[in-house]
Image (cartoon, rainbow, N blue to C red; front, side, top):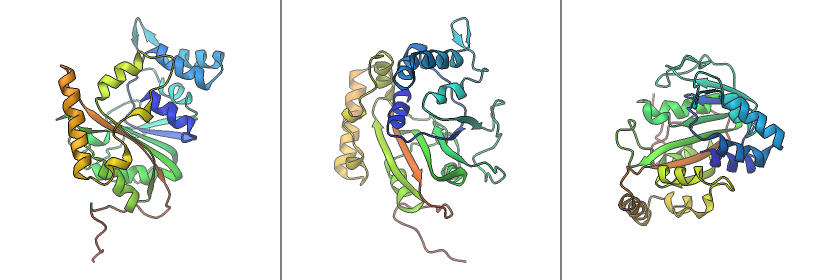
Length: 263
C-alpha cells in the first residue's frame, strides 16, 4: 500500500485534505517508509518526516500517537482526519451503516483501506465517500476480493468498481489486482531500492472488467498457484482509485443498469 501511494503521488492523484475511513495501523518499517520519503522529499525533509511518524515505545510504534498526519504528508496530503464509530482518536465518530449527513467539511481524498467489508450496509460506505468528496476528489479503496473468508462480511469484486463508474458519478484512475497480498507485501518490504512493479502484475483491469469466463479462470488459476506455492493463507485484494466527476446525487446501481424510479 505504501508503494501504491507512491505510485499515485507520481501520477499527481494525491492532493489536498484527507479523510480516512478507519484510522490505519502503520506496520511498515521505518526503513521502507524512509526509502519512499527520500524519493519524494529532500534528505533532511525525509528524515524529519519519518521521525515525526515513528513515535516509539521500545521497539513498538505507539499507536496512540498521531503519526497519520506525518505519514500521509509524505505523499503530499496536507491535512488528516478520520471517521470511525469505535476509535477515540477519530474526529468523526460515525457509523457508516447509517446516513452521515452532519459533516459540513468536504475532502479532496478519502481512503477506504479495509473498512467497507466490515460494514454490513456496504453500499452506504461508497455513498458516504461520494457525498463527502469534492468534485474531482479521489476515493482510494484497498478491499478484499478473493480468498479472505470471514475477514469481513463481503469480498468486493471488480464489477463493483465498474458499476460505480458506469452509474454513480465516478471514473476509474487506477486499478491493481494484487494476488497474494501478503506475499507481495513481504517482498516489497524487503526491497528498499525501488517501488513495487505494478505494471508486472498479470491480472489487468482490461481483462477483469467484463467478468468473462476467461477472466474468472485466470483469477482462479492464479489463486491455486499461489496456494500451492505457500503454506500460509492467500488473499487477493483490489487497489482502486476512483475520481468523483459529478456534482449530482449518488446513484445506487444494479449490476445490469439502473431501474426506473417509481413513486
